[in-house]
Image (cartoon, rainbow, N blue to C red; front, side, top):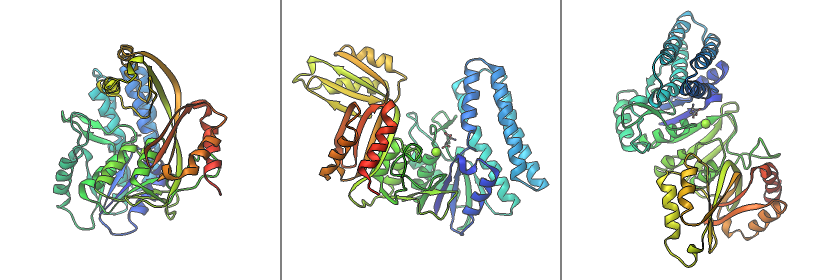
Length: 439
Ligand code: ASP
Ligand code: MG
């Protein structure tokens, strides 16, 4: 059984949805289709929630109406039969009535999550209606019936697996299931989600839960590229990656795959394929446990990084200092990405500044702190790159004209991370590309 996940751009236009329908019916293998919301919808829903949070009901109403108009257009181009259009009209009416009711009640975080869930509910229902119109047998599989997270927002894999297996066993061997990415229930049994971009995570979790043969992530690019194709000339898709390499790249900014979606597939050894809806025959990228080839495979960059330096003579020859520092970040549930240390100072990077003020206040107890905003982590990833002695020289040569704030080398065999001011990012990526890849 395989999982096929289609992202927002793959379902964002009526003709694309038709393409998705063709792609999922090419063979009779049993499959679960995971859909994102139509592109732009989740952002619009976030905007509606923000307006409501600020008490701007008129603005929220305006945003709801704009989104509503978009769906009115969409379904007419998607469906041609009277019956199909009637069904779609009803679906859209229901969901927008819900949004309009929210305007009248008092707003809170749980309601906001309900708002955010509307995108995937709409996309899957409209797609299901399209399949019905084309007489393609399929089963609608509501994610809210099986996908759940615990009180720490961690997915409950064992429970998800039990629930899914209990549902799936009632259907034929060649059944086609349609389900929502991103949305889930939380430990309070409220509607919740797996965070932005979480539909990939849904697909990987389902793959792990039912031990699928493969998890296919269909997007609008032909696999993970060796560098950011929006910034750098001459990039190319990478055919093979190991889970570890893919995790580094996904985490450090290769937007094509949600970073959390690696671990479920890796834990249960389910291959992940990154494929292009617009170019379905392209081989894309295959991610497996196997380590293939040595050397640098790709460069990725993650913006919005903040570097925090803690300088303290108390660190000199002391043990337990780092623990105390890390405990502060832990207390505020703020993950650290990069670390570099000297005898009297430690620098760490974070990308979540929600509790930066509190963190700095507590760190000041240990020493002086310095903060650098607008930093970018440039990550050079590959297999056994630390053993590749020439590589670090090439990295240094490529970056010789830029002030480098931090370097992390040797933390794993798969990555070297370099922190630079974001203003140098594009040029740094291009120079690294020219230096590290010859073609
Ligand atoms: N629709 C959600 C988002 O835009 C989830 C996803 O597309 O993966 O974040
Ligand atoms: Mg995505």
